[in-house]
Image 1: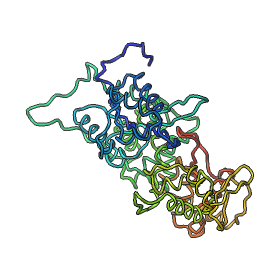
Image 2 (image 1 turned 180 degrees about the vertical axis):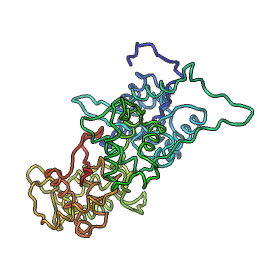
Image 3 (image 1 turned 45 degrees about the horizontal axis):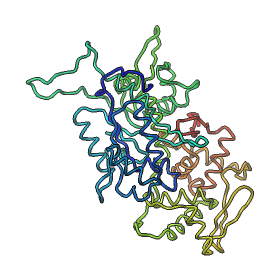
Image 4 (image 1 turned 30 degrees about the vertical axis):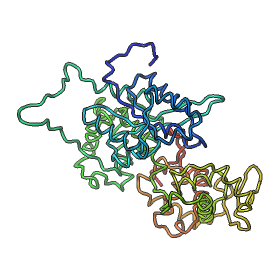
Length: 449
């Protein structure tokens, strides 16, 4: 929507967007220091779409942000609200979101953090974002797209023939119960939607006979019995009742017309899939030294048989201490200077080995296949045993982690890096399918496997 275009509806119909400003300032986790420019870019996009916006930041952000004076001005002007010292902005955002929802408002929390999903149990929807560098500028991509939020708000505006219900003397309004869909079944259905060729979008029509056939194959010919449906059409009706599709008939065949809610759900699934497996269990103290964390990160890489590159060390440090701010590049440089690590350049890669200690490592991108036919058979068996929600939109790392957890001994005993290597080779062999998603390429396990 252009800024000069008059609004189609009153401002009160627009959702509230509650912005986790501290999370936004750190971008997609790639910035060593939070940037005020990213906050301004995000708020600029939200203003352009004329949402109602409230932005909170933690009190400590002003001490580390790249332009502290500009941030102080935004706080003084009321553009940003600073949380009281000692209290996290997350708590205030969640409390405000639930409060506005209780007044019938549509509310989203804009953050890449998972606290809205974990603590509000999905009650408050989340908007994730990615900061994309484009030359000298940076563009912010949102998921779901901001335009879809406007469409959603417009769908909820009552027309004269759909007036809102009013309270009666009989007590509060009783909402019609929505039939719940088992998460495994919904994940399997989304797997079909994501891999449908050609790709589907809002308004696309999918023959329900194709859906039913796919689900029968996924659940050994008995998805209705397994999930309590008297007949396949009952599942189609449940999808419509939950707002994912509209049922359409073109002559005798039944079609599912895809609604925006289903596309948002598919996009959300691809964003969250990378985080579906819990972080490494840890009992870290917030005062644990960065050198100690570095040693633990290297130990995890040794157990996985991964090469100790800067990127993999950074990922392990994040899994061990997600809230601890540290510069991986600076930490590695200091460790090399103190002779704790030795720096090795090989080809185009750089490795940081513990001084006097190296391990057998595997490059998951190596195109050579050193694995026996028996091991490949075990790999295929592990694919068969994957639960449906782990068969769609996986990264190589998490698909390998899932395969090692299904209980096939030969695969379970493989180091993580070797299993990732087999996943990559399986993609090259067309045993697995790479699909585009809003967060980049992901891997699907085809139904016949």
